[in-house]
Image (cartoon, rainbow, N blue to C red; front, top):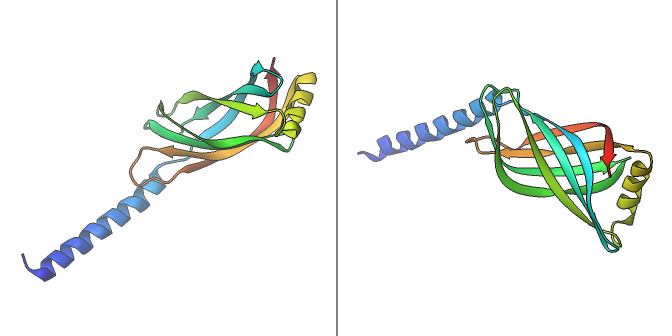
Length: 156
């Protein structure tokens, strides 16, 4: 194989890969993610554990194999929780799926966030906003951003 032929073959491969990236990005539509539940799971003098439930609507005709979720949750405009969680699950094509994230808050370091949520507990609901991204196991697909807001009931 001549050196010129190998260079053209490598260049062709690069062009094919780059066009696949552009095509995949335009074919995959980001899902809608909403916060559906907030449940106080455990409470002690030093910490509280909450279970956050999320619903995901996949508008694509194919399933979305989720590998990781990066998230940030605010209650009444105050930062409550955030981070990244790994765990494989799949959202069916043109369907809905659910996932939960357990959040443990240190009472001493997170007093503002806990106070905001406890005020919501006293009135049974709190305004929320959530944003983040879903990383999916689809070649050449970047993490897909999501955001939503609304009012959520607090389960005691």
